[in-house]
Amino acid sequence: MSTTKRLYLEALREKKLFLIGLLMLFVAVVTELIGPMIAMHILDKYVKKSAILEVNAILQLLGLYMIVAVVYAIFSYYQTIYFQTAGSNVIKNLRISLFKHVQKLPIHYFDNLPAGKVVARITNDTQTILELFTVMLPSYISGIVNITGIIIVIFIFNYKVGLLALIVVPLLFFWLMYYRKVSDQYNRIVRERNSDMNAMLNESINGMTIIQAFNQEEKIYREFTDLNDEYLKNYEKIIKLDSYTSHNLMGTIRSVVFLIMIYIFGVSYLGKEMTLTVGMMYILVDYLTRLFNPLFNMVNQLSLLEQARVSANRVFEMMDETKEPTESDAFKSIKGHVTFNHVNFEYKPNEPVLKDINIDANIGDTIALVGHTGSGKSSIMNLLFRFYDPTEGQILIDGHDTTKMTKSSMRKHMAIVLQDPYLYTGTILSNITLNDERVSREAAIDALHKVGGDRVLQSLEQGIDTPVVEKGSTLSSGQKQLISFARALAFNPKILILDEATASIDSETESIIQNAMDVVKEGRTTFIIAHRLSTIKNATKIIVLDKGEIIESGTHDELIALGGQYAKMYQLQSARQSSAI
Image 1 (tube, rainbow, N blue to C red):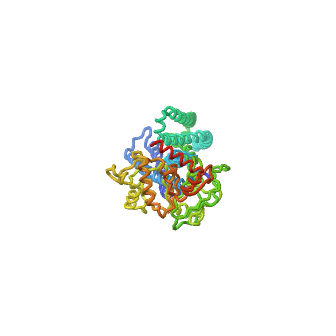
Image 2: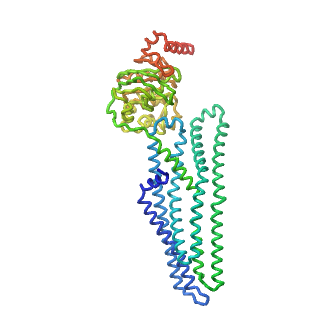
């Protein structure tokens, strides 16, 4: 479906407001066309060389002229309001639809797309489309109606001048086609570089501590400057294209038309044909001026029109991205029996990261995954949470294939705690409940205390209502992790996933969390990715991974007795801890 058609369909949602706006615009344009006719009537009927001015008649006509002007102003005012309201509603709905669509895109879509580019399409590109509906659309419709009406009126008064005015229309049409063809490539690069700058700013701000710690300010500055220079270089090409032709082109055509108009008037007057009276000359000049005003507006807004078209293409490209399939079946309840049955997985074709994974976790079991970096631990968690689906094999929960169940119904019974917990702007309470009605204030406080929340609250005057800035930068790593644990527990999950959740906290906080977890994991199936092997001694089963394959599995004591990879890793960590002590 073409971009133009899709924009039209979006506009149909607000067709009532647009139709009222169009009616107001049409009345305003027609009213504006009446004004010069009244002025011509004054000049031709009441202003003669040897006649006495009929003051009352002139005042009546001037009063009528004033009424016309007021009516035009009123309808123009309401036309602007209705178009602005309709356009704003269209963009509001488009942004909501786009954001909703983005949330349903598969995780792998965002693997290679910086967050700043997504933000640019939802905010900047839709804002450019807003100008299409609120500024350009009324201007172009008004211009077309004006041009059509003026040419018809000019034809009625003088067909020669009418033919002259009519020639302007195909010139404008061909110019529109040429401009679109030339400027498209520049506008596309401009929008892309704008997205690149958004992405870079987002990344730089989030990583400012690393940039400053490693003295990379100059390097980042040069990279940003290069993007900005390329943006400006292409934008200057658009400006030059506009400067060379748009205003100059229409100005030249207008001058030629007026020259011919003056010639026609002069020949008529000197030849004593008097086909053009003073009033007729006034109205033709006035209408020709009015003819070129909308032409100037339309040509001068070509750049904005093309930017809006390119932005619309970018928005609808994202809207056309394939959403994750919606499954029909849903988990009404989960007990927590998880089975990996001969699971293989690839992020990229022919590059396996998991090979023939078989795991059987009964209700209440604690399954620990250990292994060197890149062994496949996090990939197993990604599959369990259905951020991705297996390339081969099955993952079963209570005997049901997870790929046949809706993700939302499955995730309602699951919770995850990451190594680097993410906190949102709000309060500690809102970060635990996520403003979900299912989690009460009392449940949030209880969950926080179970994971050792006294440590979080003891130094905070406002307690659980303490404000939290973005990413929780005013809190310590341990405090953020405890809040993240409380968030997971408050939702009372049947399956709990701890993705290296104790890796970034101190030993004292680790002890608090470990004690809390011994209490709350009862009756829950828990998967733990752990670097600190001392935290998983009591796990029901420890699975050792290497290059995507399970090489050992068993309890802590069994694996130590086996003397394999796990035993070596444990002895090495124990030796390091003893040395540190």
